[in-house]
Image (cartoon, rainbow, N blue to C red; front, side):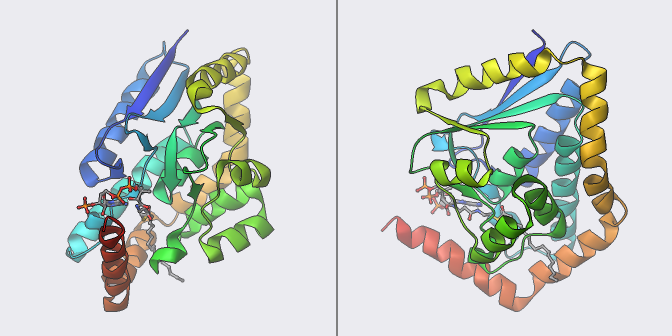
Length: 248
Ligand SMILES: CCCCCCCCCCCCC/C=C/C(=O)SCCNC(=O)CCNC(=O)[C@H](O)C(C)(C)COP(=O)(O)OP(=O)(O)OC[C@H]1O[C@@H](n2cnc3c(N)ncnc32)[C@H](O)[C@@H]1OP(=O)(O)O
C-alpha cells in the first residue's frame, strides 16, 4: 500500500548521534523521492526505548566546529521530517524524551504504547539546557501555549495517559497493538487524496518551518555558543553522571 516502516536502531538507547541523524535524513530523502511511497510508520527496534533524543556525547566535550556541524544536521532532519509530503505516523514503543519527542511531534499522528514506564516530553530544562525556539514552536502547535509553557519550564516527562490527556500523543493502546494501530491509522490517512492533504499540511506547518529556515545560520551560532559555555558543559556533565549512577 506504499507504506514504509522506519525502525530506529542505534543501541543501546537510539540516541541521535551525528551518524544516526545523517543516515536518518538520507533514508527519509530516498523515501520522499520514491513515488510509490505515500506514508511512513516511524518506530524503534530498541526494546523499551523509542529514542533517548539527541546524543549528549555530541554536545559534550567537543569543539565549536563539531557543535555547529551537529546542529546543522539536527536542523536538517527536523526540516525534512516536519515538512515531509508523506504521511508520517509514529508508533511510540518506548521512552521518548527531548529529541525523541521531537521526532514524534513531527509526525501527523502519534500512537503510544500503554506502559507507564515509557515517558514522553521535552525535558531539556531538567538537563540545564533550553529547548530551541523551533522545538518550542512545534510543542505550542501541538498542545497549546499554556500547556507548552508549563511543560517546557518543568521539563515534564508525561506518562502515556498524561500525554494523551494533554495532546502530546493522539492515541494510547496496549503495547502489543501499537504497530497494528499505526497501520490502521495509516490506512485512514491514505484514503485522503495526496494533493489536498499535502497542501493542507503545508498550510498548517509552513510558517513554523520558515521561522527556522530564515535564521538557520544564526540558530547554529546560538546553539554553538550556548552549548560551549562552561556552565552548560558542567550541567551536561552532571546529567551524564546522574545517568551513570542510576545504574548503581
Ligand atoms: C535565550 C536562550 C538561548 C537559548 C539557545 C538555545 C540553544 C539550544 C540549546 C541546546 C538544545 C539541545 C536540545 C537537546 C535535546 C535532547 O534531546 S538532549 C537529550 C535528552 N535525553 C534525555 O534526557 C534522555 C536521557 N536518557 C535516559 O533517560 C535513559 O537513558 C533512557 C532513555 C530512559 C533509557 O534508560 P535505560 O534503559 O535505563 O538506559 P541507561 O542505562 O540510562 O542508558 C544506557 C546508556 O546510554 C547512555 N545514554 C542515555 N541517553 C543518552 C543520550 N541522550 N545521549 C547519549 N547517551 C545516552 C547512558 O549514559 C548509558 O551509557 P553508559 O553508562 O555508557 O552505558
